[in-house]
Length: 285
Image 1 (cartoon, rainbow, N blue to C red):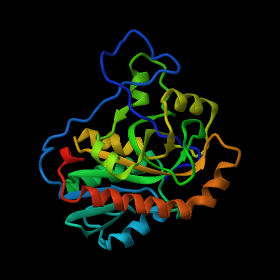
Image 2 (tube, rainbow, N blue to C red):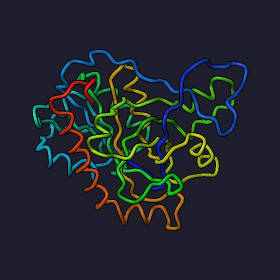
Image 3 (cartoon, rainbow, N blue to C red):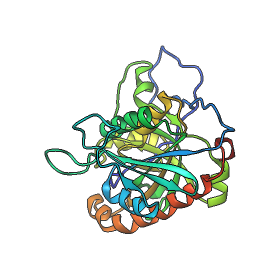
Image 4 (cartoon, helix red, strand yellow):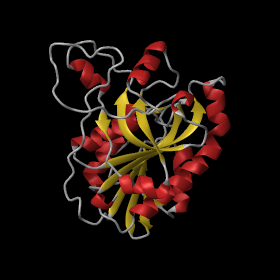
């Protein structure tokens, strides 16, 4: 889910950490590219991680996926949902954190996203992860409503730890899996994603987002990429802009106003991405 004011953050470069100094304001944390093996093998399985039911259901219909009613791959009692099926020769699993068991709202945010991603990787062993969802965009970085971004890197903007090296850990900048052929073929915009657990944007968050050089922001992306990186699973992130974080309209109002139309644009973009992936290896992306 992209809280209406979110921005995406691209990862910085990883080289030499100076443990004697805290990263100065406006700097970007170390970028940690994932190590991927088997890049020449054909991609056969994709895991799509989405936060909100509204974002997920159009893709479930498009790919003709069926729900795993007994949720047998997940621990007993969790609300997580899995849909699965085959599309253009690819086995697709689409997972989402489901609804809060007490309040009945979508389980948005980094904790739920990380947990369902972890469990899904363990059970399904995907070749590639796609984190898809809506996001807030920044006009100053060229973002417009309905723009689709392929995220080049992620970071966090609300994990402030002003201690040497821990500061870099908090920012958690990482590159997503590089897909130059996909970008060229589909003509997608590319930008960095910054992730945080609040829908609004405090002055401190805004400063961190700017320091992360993010174009879009959401509430899950960096957490998904973090877990994928732990297990060396290549991950990409596709984000559709629902609202302009540095615009004039109230965030919540603009988000709700554009959610359905932007979700349709996200559906089309992810379908094109999956269609491009079909029949290719990781190195071919």
